Length: 409
Ligand code: PMP
Image 1 (cartoon, rainbow, N blue to C red):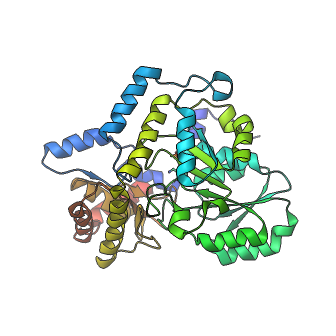
Image 2 (spheres, rainbow, N blue to C red):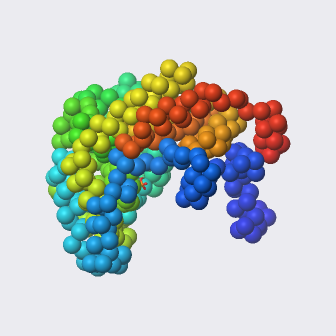
Image 3 (cartoon, rainbow, N blue to C red):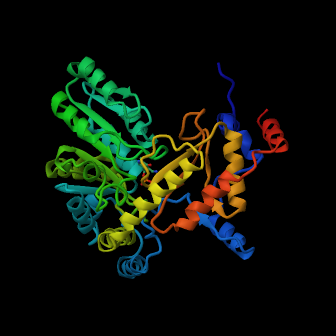
């Protein structure tokens, strides 16, 4: 019999993932951003964050703050129950109507996070005789959904639609219903799939298509409507679209869009909706205002696209690899090893640029990177500054390498 351990000992053993020894050398996670910013600025260093996905720079927009305050006074903070049994606030339906209309869908339903929207939709939708095809680099929320589902799960190589087609040709007949889930813009790589071809495959092989557009609202397409607009595909050919209010809408919460009949069914049965609290009215009021502002101040969408393309090109000219990033919203700079990545991140922070290292968590172990979230509010000088700083940076010293190596031993 396995020797019984205290839960704390068990947790300590489970937490010993390869990278966490690095934390003894330097812990870049859970940084106290406000304090850090104040300290740097007090010493005369301008603080610029590339770590937050405030894509259109709306997070402190005075109209959003004012609307949030107004709604707080009006309805208070909480929704206080599941909407099904506890009733709705006056802000729930209007936001859902607005987001569905904007994205070109018949209906939408909000949930407390984008993560939950993926997990519960994927887990709920498919049965034992069905299959879910996902990209091998799918976001953890998609994986959590497939883990919780009773359907078969088949992975295809990242953005490789030849591979998907091959797998569909081989396996489609074995299953009753098939769901294919892809992301509009991959959050660690900043790349995208060939949507026109994917919708052709959908018609040919008869599957339902679900898009995770967490990083696409306000980011892809001339008016920020996401991958369908960017790729010139009618949203009608997408069966389900999951999105989040935590990025461009500078708030939090998720939504799922689809045909009215589907969303009506979800409204009464989707476990993550029915058995969870409704979104706070304050959050909905903020997100709804952000959605309106995104359309009224549409220059922000163009500026973000220009900034991201400029960043990618400038980084490439400086000799850095940005992988397959298309130059929208998220752009990574790829590194050889964890130590160099952590070192670069720390040195950038000394100069006022906050870019946390992505090592071990969320990416394959041998593909560390600095991930940059671009924003419409970044200036050209800030973008050039961070790349110049990275280019002129001396490599990690022998001493630093030794410290890290001994911490990891
Ligand atoms: N999907 C993707 C691709 C994401 O990157 C994220 C969050 N980073 C989510 C879903 C979850 O969104 P939320 O933050 O609203 O939970």
